[in-house]
Image 1 (tube, rainbow, N blue to C red):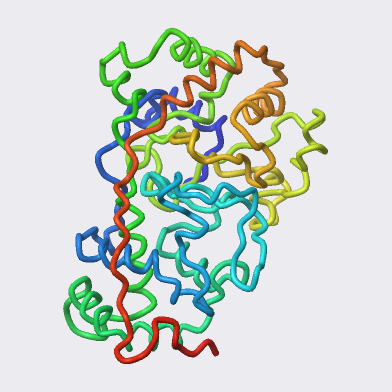
Image 2 (cartoon, one colour; image 1 turned 135 degrees about the vertical axis):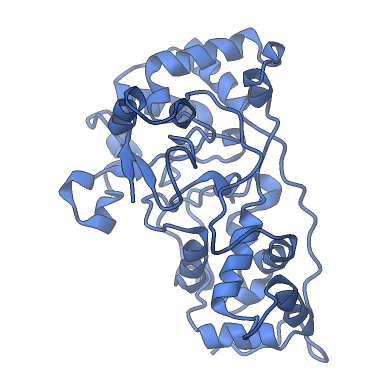
Length: 353
């Protein structure tokens, strides 16, 4: 398992990895990374979509995946922190799921190595779905004939089709379909130079010159290319704040959460974070792991100071913002699925214990 930081990525770029792995400006690939043990099929993705919108995956039927990752509005919920089961508040901000199929580790601290694992952990988490009783989940789904048929279509063969593993594989398959191609930026890097105006091009150059590209580069503006450089389970990390001591440390609580260190226990990992993607960033406010930056201008100013000790002018902020807005791609078409109904009883009539 590789774990790269911005410094090591630059060194590797100068050495032997293929150029495409570390090319700064790249268009969005046509396909997500797919693990060998969970090939992507239409049947699995369709089942995963139903499960994504079904509140019965939460313990008391009150929460869906779409509540915190609302596909109609950038695949996040627009809150600094999200509300889960029993009114619990999550500790960190819910990141967007758009283009998550191009990420290689998950959560702000990179603790999860696959989308399947991420789903299982979310399902059981006491501050998210609260569904830590696998038997109860399987019984709920097994009592619904439409789910029984959908699982059999998605997972044909011997053995029970409905299982926690298959539920996770179906949801992960759906998430891998949430790509956002054809942004104006993508068209620009493919050769249509008229797709960015003068201010956006100036912002792109500022983004490079200030140093933002040392972390936010590649197909997802989150580091080395998935596939050529990073395989599923490999992570790319950076310190934040890289230069503690600014006014933002206290006003935005930037030092309260120690990131990867809280998973690894390694003192060298304090304030180390998985580099988040920047595509569709115009749709995903608020920003940072704690949601403390309410808008893009604030996030740009804080990043320049916290990472590079640079104070930007209003004109520079506006130019960088204009460039970042060009990263918004075509959004996935969201047609709400018809959810299976229980035969002869109300939708929400199911045991919660």
